Amino acid sequence: MKYVLTVAEERSFSNAAKKLYIAQPSLSQFIAKLEHQLGVQLFDRTISPLRLTYAGELYIEISKKILDLKTQLSNQMDDIAELKKGRITIGISPFRSTYTLPHILPLFHERFPGIEVILAEGTMDELEKFALRGTTDFSIMNLPIKENLFDYEPITTEEILIALPPRHPLSQSLRKKKDLQPQIALANLREDPFILLKPGQRLRQSAMDLCWQAGFKPHIALESKSIEAAYALVATGMGVTFVVDTLANQRPNGSLCCSIAGLKPTRSIVIAYRQGRYLSKASKEFIVVAKDIFAHKNHNI
Image 1 (tube, one colour):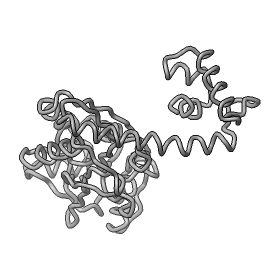
Image 2: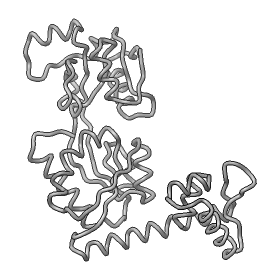
Image 3: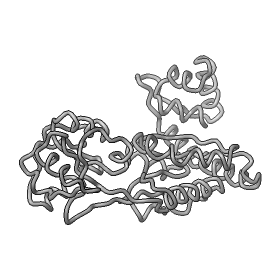
Image 4: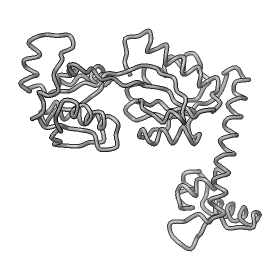
């Protein structure tokens, strides 16, 4: 089933063979033998890239369910082994794998050295799909999510801040006040160029909503897929942007990061998993460690 799934994903025997670390002729022979046993063709080989036949689509659909059940069975067997060995697969964005996992994983590995951790990185939409399909045991995401499809455990919150270039007039005046956490009215930036994340990213939507609440539509000078890139560009003076305190606290770059006066918007970070999915003991312990880290230490994710 894994062989067929990989060929379907890659739409190429050669690419699938490389991913599976087997010879292409062996893979082709294996699939051909399987098709002979089933009495149907799973792939249409007359076109390039390969395409699933109707029988192939059905085979894939059922195989995913069977493999997910197999994973859940394996998780329950790991529980019997009292966490001496096991595996958890975590869905996470590249940003959070940089700024979240370094706080959690060292303690988790110290407590459970026999548990293998596998990361599946992706966008928020992809992380939801990973969790729903059983590709991951759970995903670390920020709300909102499709709550009718997920259960989740809150682990912390982070504040959305506005980052100003070092030489911005407001930066200079606010620095003189020496406030521990300077505040700024967002309406004061209505004439400034904004560096925002690309449409479809959740911080982008939050940014647009905040600007609308402040009574203006932001002038977007530049868009990026990376919050870190946007933050770095602010330091060069190219514009202002929205960041989270996770980034601002852990990677200061000379920009002045301010709370948004009168709003102080935050977002919740959660560990989410498909409703009704069995959570292994290792997964539950990971959640305990994550909550413990951010409840008792002065860290934000």
